[in-house]
Length: 306
Image (cartoon, rainbow, N blue to C red; front, side):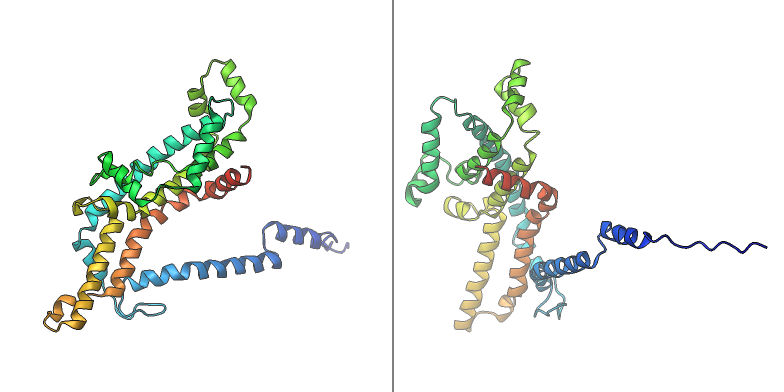
């Protein structure tokens, strides 16, 4: 009677197993790197988590709020955050679109050194990157063109950032000239080449510049503070700043004047500040995940190869 055959593993199986583990990223080195990245991510996110729980509780606990309250958010809503949020959102959308359009066509035109007057225009742009007229000429110019107390004052004066033009210009210079020449042979004009060929293939730098402009518009409170006198036109950042300043003044007055009703100043100031930070930060932070895949590539290409 023949003995049953015992299947033995081939000698090369151990090496194959290691290769499979290495391919799946389960080697010890990979696990160590993953652990380090997880710890680094937790350290980076912990400050945001602390701000979040502080907006829901007074006083603040380290992991959980010791008391849960929505008084901070309730005060913000009562102060008119809905109207101010709408102003900020519209200014950000319109301003970003207009700035991106002007920056793109300017950068594409300036990327062609054969353009008439290219040297003088570039010299003027570079000059404005290092020297400015100052606050008083800026204020008088805005007042002279009739933008005082207008929504457009938050869009037009800062419509074009010369540094962003320079980044996009550097990116366009790397665009293959043979592709544009082929398009011109087929009868395409400069504007058609820009809209149909250059822009669709330049999404990394366009997405990065869009994010820069959107953050600038969203966080801008200084321009409306200078030029807006109608409180109904205030963006959210300026409205929240004025609200926090008013609360600080009330508390300061309460310390020195005993006649003030104590019930009127029972405002959770810490949670109110943290709630204001969350309300102003979350909308613009929500944009990052959609542009993250373009962000690093667009900035590095546009800056290094300039």
